[in-house]
Image 1 (cartoon, rainbow, N blue to C red):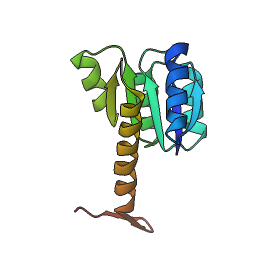
Image 2: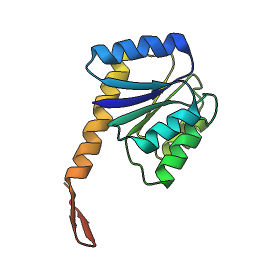
Image 3: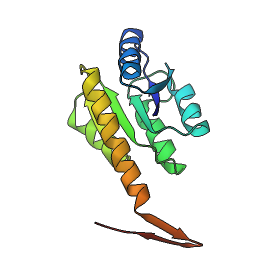
Image 4: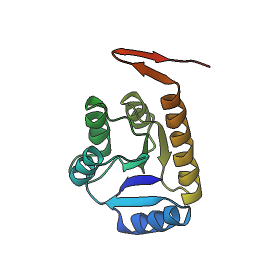
Length: 138
């Protein structure tokens, strides 16, 4: 599973990258929002993990722009800020999950698996024939 990870704190980034690789993820990493946004547009990822507070475009801006462009890869927001308004804004912009620092890499990995499972399940329930799209509900 390919994951884009955008985080500017080197210590956290190295720890998380190593932990996710141990869990079998292929991690594409960058330390600023502008580069992260471009990579998210240019590549197909199974999931994207965005720190909200990064140099360049912040995580919420990246999320908003990706959703506006029709990019629906699952997004998990990562932040030290644990205020309700930040969580609500991220979820309302289309985030699939939210995890506050500090956290365990194992929990992040489990959350990535969960958002990917939901995403795959949604795609499998979609039937497209010509201009008609039908979504089945269970």
